[in-house]
Structures are given as C-alpha cells and as structure tokens.
Length: 291
Image (cartoon, rainbow, N blue to C red; front, side, top):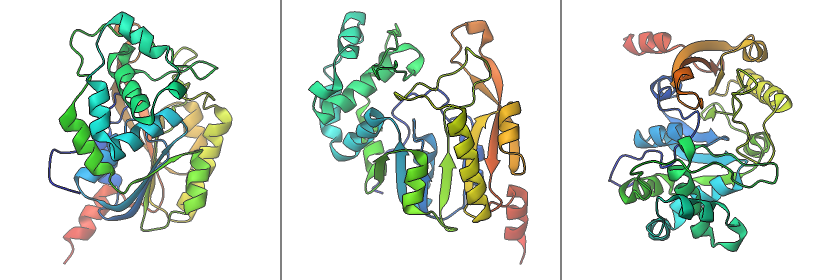
C-alpha cells in the first residue's frame, strides 16, 4: 500500500465496528495470508488491518450489490466518484430526487456516488431497502454533512488496490475459496434483533433471518474444527448464546445510537465469538515473553 493518509471507512454504517475495533484487531493474527470479510458493511475492520499492513491479500464481500459496486468504483475510479459527489447538495428536495432514481439508469460510478451521498445525508447513516429493493431512508437534516471527502476516499482507494470484491452469499464466498490456518475470517452479519422494533436487517432485498443465523453458526463451528482463525460479532441475547454455545464468547458493552427515541440510545450488549484457532490474548503475550 502506498504512503498517504491512514485508510478509514468512508461510509457510516448501522452497527459499525469503531468501538469494537481495538478488541477485534487484538484477536486477529499478527500476519494474515488472506483476510476474508463476507459482510463488509462499512469495512472498519478491513481498513484497520490495512492500516497496519497485517494481510497479504483480502477478499471483501456483501449481499448488497450497490454496496459492492460502491467499493469497486472507489477502488477503480476514485476520481470519478469524487467528481460525481461534488455535484450533490444537502437539500431535502435534491435528496429525495436522488433517492427516487433507479440505479440501473446511472453509470457504475454515478451509482457509487449515489450510495455515498444517500449515506452521508440520510437519517442516521442507515442503509435500508423495502421489499422491492428500493432505498427508503428519509432525509437526515444534518447542518453540514461531509458529502465529499477526497482525502478519505483516496486513502480508501489505495487500501482497496488488488482487493477481491464479491457480491454473493457468505457461504458461497468462503466455500469457493476455502480459507486455511494462515488466513483470518471476520464475520459481521446483520445482528439478531433484541426486540421486534430493533431489527435493521433489511439492508438487502432479502432480509437476514433465523435460518441465515443458523447457517452462520454452523459455518463458524466448521471454521473452528478446521482451526481457521475467525471472529464473529453479534448481539448478546439468549438466541446468540444458544447458537454459539461451545465456542469462546466474549461479552462487551457497546454504545449504539440507532434507536429512533434518543433517551433509549445507550450501552447494549454485544458478543465476540472466536474459533479455537485463536489463542487468548493473555496467552499470546505470555508466549511472546518466553526466551
């Protein structure tokens, strides 16, 4: 990766990993052959690992085609994305006009800029679509949002050089590539909702439901049996404790601000689940200290 600004996420994302990032980076191997992130979202863990040059290769994936295209265009045509973003304005009328546009009528670069613009100016940085796959987040009414951040986008583009980007189901992404013991897999799925009103799983046309959560738990068990280093994050609730029973679970409080009622925003329980291939940090430190 070239010299320049430290790479960092250029999208806001519900459930972003900024607060958990130090813990996740501590659990990741110091040297990684290939890093896999099948639910890339805002990419905080990827950019954190990239900033420390911890991996040789990376595969980023998501089921959301607009998100994957956004990463591809930032990687391959960042100047075009920046130019397209400069045309957008933080105005309600302009926002709803862009929101109502059909991505199919735009160039790939314009589609990427549209995602970033709606993300920066939409309510709480949410990415939510209806049953027809149409983006439906209302205008956020921010005073001065940073719609175009050339330095951040350019740094992200450098970090994405030579990264493989895939739009597919998480199981297909890993089954086709078969990560091994020298690799690292980070899984950040749409969380198991803590209540009926707390679900933000509709970031793709098909919601991520209980069957998908079970498929994911089975996958993490297989990675653990194969001694592939992997970490998964999810909400801390009875269902996730059942799904990941038998694996190493670390409970952590995280402050979230996605509740529509301000006074209900605050610390919530989340979990980090790791495979047996990852030693406890204390053990790793002790081993490093031995002569």
